Amino acid sequence: MSQQQIHLEADNLADLLLRAYEAAYEQGWTDGLPVIPAIPELVDRFVAASGRAGGGVIGLVPPRKGRATVRSAAVNAVMAGCRPEYMPLILAALEAMLDPAYPLEFMQVTTNPMTPFLLVNGPIRRELEVNCGTGCLGPGWRANATIGRAIRLMMINLGGALPGVYSKVSFGSPLRYSYICGENEEESPWAPFHAERGFAREDSTVTVFKASNFCNISGGEGVGADEILRQIATNMPPMYGGGDGVLLLIGINHAHSLHEAGLSKQDIRQRLWELARLPASHFAADFAQIETAAGRGDGASVWRARKPEEIYLAVAGGAGPQDVYIGAGMPQTRVVRRG
Amino acid sequence: MIATDTFARFGRRMAATQGCPYLVIAETPNPIRQLDADALRVRAEAMLPTVVDGLTLPPDEIERRMQDFARGQIRPEGVVRSSTAV
Image (cartoon, rainbow over all chains, first blue to last red; front, side, top):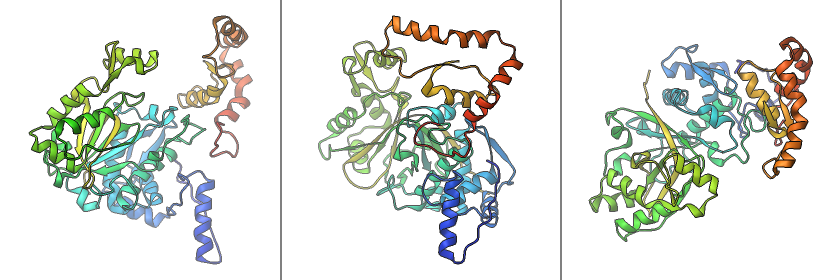
């Protein structure tokens, strides 16, 4: 992204605000929603909050190979409506997405609407007010709305993934505006996700998944662990693009029910892996063959993940008999280092 | 490259990001998966001259022939977004 500047004038503030929005839209810098104009003074403030040098190169964003620097990330964070203190988290997520093991180029250009999903762990959730509880995947929370949006704006402005130009996405997805939440560690009966991956509990981390969908699973309240898991597994169908694993966000009610029944996270993974299977005859023959070749089928049935360890579990959301299934995999976790 | 027309411009843009803006692309109308072997053969034969050009023409000649065309495909003038592929 070149650091192009435009000069705007108007007779009054209302016209200036509208012109700023129109100009950004005409330049193709937005996701369609209004943006905060990234004036140099604001960008400087965001760079300073990152604790890094503005020119520091983080990597090249595919497919257009735009140079991601701290400053270009700051420009997009300003436009997205972020607070300056979000910058270390945004940069950590960007670094995770640019890891060679993360399929960012594929995600940017494919017809499938896959998108990054960000899971935030550790003290930074509270410091930045990343919503982990009630409504954590919905609107109304600035950190959740704008950090994910900054990620998408970088994918557009640095990577060039405008639909119809570099992106061949057929439908796109509302998840592409912002897809992020924190883990509800305070109400989880188990060790948090990042601790399971070898990080210290007091570490602040962001994990970026390749994600394909959102499926809220309702039901199963108060009927025991077996029924809860059966209900969840039935709503975890195999699907193209999600075939690398599952991220299950377990609601706090079910988390406590399962924990009280004596189940560990590994027990839940194993049980879901056994239950989340469907007859191969339910699918197109090609799909069933591909899944079988990938280790997720045996000719007679197709299942959701190659092994239980590809079912990733985190506790999130508020009270209620709800869980969320996300076809997701290839997680990349980074420690958020504050300046 | 062999592609259906729906993917040809996209293919050229992706090739340009890899340093090959003048990639020779043999196109056929989308879709093709419903075609039987005979119909597919007709399509393949129609693309053969382009394939042969790509394999035999010197790079300078390919560039001369493709320059304006490729520029228009990679960076369509004035277009920053489109609900139909550009």
